[in-house]
Image (cartoon, rainbow, N blue to C red; front, side):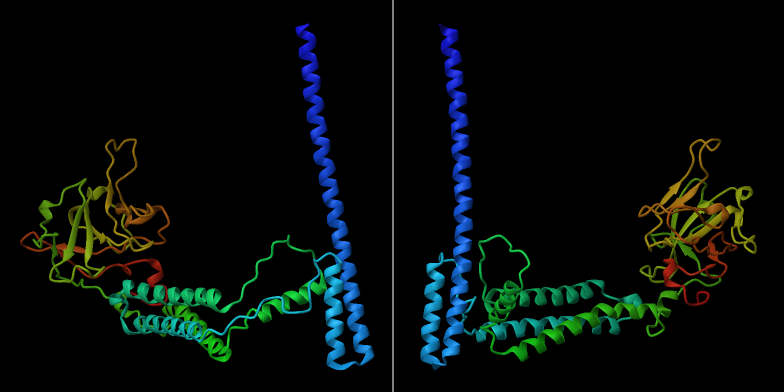
Length: 389
């Protein structure tokens, strides 16, 4: 008995689910049929409206007759399903907003001022004194005010319309309506020439500001300050505290930072990295045999890849099986072999670190025996000119 009741309950449940599913499908089919009928009625209404307008024009009844035809067209469209569009405006007319127009012009003017400021700053300062923060403020202000002007324009000067239907398929008549919609959306704008002129001027100045850094690639910009070096024969090496560096204090497996005595430490060519290797390990390029007294080597501390500081020194704990000593830039891990003139053995750097020739004076202090072997800084700084001055 219980089994029978359970089976009956299961059959009833399945039948109820099937009946509800069929009812939903029937309603969905009926909804689609009604929608199709509505579209057909709407098309018929449009056809009746077109026919009524054509009749009014042929009758030559003037404005009165045209008005009656317009009313007939509207009535025909409404009676055909209520979905037909009238030939009136697609977008409701908007009230003029002079304040918004002047606000947009003012914001564009501020954007132009910041863009001009970027150009002036870039042209006024030398490469060594270029204020990157000020350049960022100028470009950021120009882009920010331009974006704010566009936001105000779209918010307060463009009449908007919300479309609830799905995006329609390609239709020439609807495409013409879209063009009409775009034209009518600008009904609030009364100073079109002023706004267009301000927008064009802002775009031109922003484009000019964006192209200004290109001058750095050509002969119009003086790159000589990037090539300045404070080193010359006889200039003494000092440690970060300003004390002269003694050759006897430089030990193997140790990394030292040195500067040109009396020079500006902010000058990228002033800072050195000093290491000491056994003289038998040196394999310096031809002509540099006397540049490393007692195995003491000095190289520029500025990486030749992107201008970072070479701040790591790799020294093998088990020289038999591990790699040889090397100078390493922590930014992108360019690795240089100090024994072979700081040649690149790993990483993206395109050329060796410039080497500074050294000599030892009678008091045991390390001094420069000349200038660097090459240009200090990233490789792309010195692709056009000769040796450092």
